[in-house]
Length: 121
Image (spheres, rainbow, N blue to C red):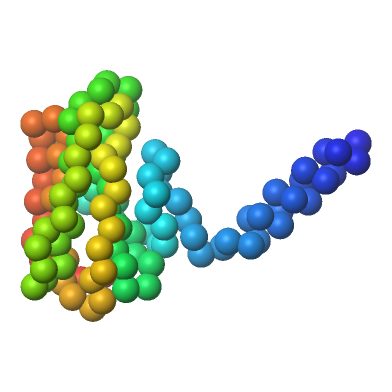
């Protein structure tokens, strides 16, 4: 009985200790608050902001099949930072310092691709 109570209290304290550091879906390492979900036929690009940093990850619409997944994030005035891998759920996350600059994001799952216009978040 007391062991279960201890586990409940500890899990409650952990939930309160980090209220603003939500994790992205599919186990990505993007932190911060989700500011955009950019959907396309085979998946979505999830965009997170944490202070002046922006993080993006591509996730499959139907996870389970191993496919090449890619994401690229570019702050205006800087070069794009791309990452890709063969995976069943998501691309690796890409994180850049954007400050208050506009951003452009691209994502791909297999041969299905998405490219955003410049936007602010």
